Image (cartoon, rainbow, N blue to C red; front, top):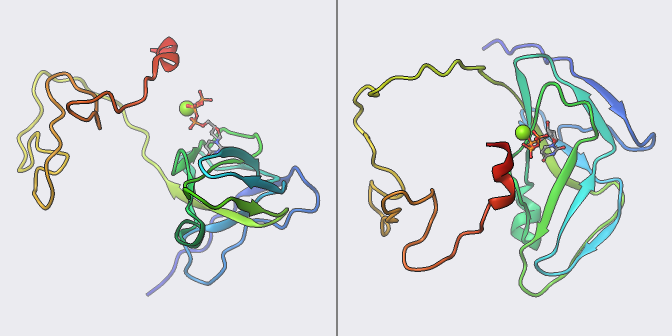
Length: 180
Ligand SMILES: O=c1ccn([C@H]2C[C@H](O)[C@@H](COP(=O)(O)OP(=O)(O)OP(=O)(O)O)O2)c(=O)[nH]1
Ligand SMILES: [Mg+2]
């Protein structure tokens, strides 16, 4: 099997001392990102951590900031927006939005700890072609547990994705409506 040569991605250190993102093992999909700031997160607390690097991806690519499974399993650390999307045109410092989901324990990060991993992928740019009817498919409109295995979520008529029936358990996104 022939493997493709690696893609060259331009990178700039915002923090001159930060180690560059690197793959821990051959075959890894994600290159580990480090934080340049130390911090302590109380249970439930979130923080935006700098990584000390910015990149210039070729057009047609995006980078995705994924959580590290070990941190999630051991400490309950998650990324609020996982996976974070780094656009090809973004030249700012890559940031990581970390949350401590452990109900009891604080979590501490030291400078240069590995906090997330960056997966670079080719992405399609699409042209949306509006039609009155979409072509038929086996799944049709079935979603959210429609194949069984657990109680299907009733999203109701006009309900937003993920809305729970019988309660107001979804967060309002009012502040995001300006851009629509
Ligand atoms: O985990 C992340 C996610 C995003 N970004 C940067 C790169 C990305 O190109 C930019 C914008 O991200 P996104 O499009 O997800 O955020 P938005 O809220 O839609 O902001 P914008 O209005 O700037 O697109 O922020 C990060 O550094 N880390
Ligand atoms: Mg955006």
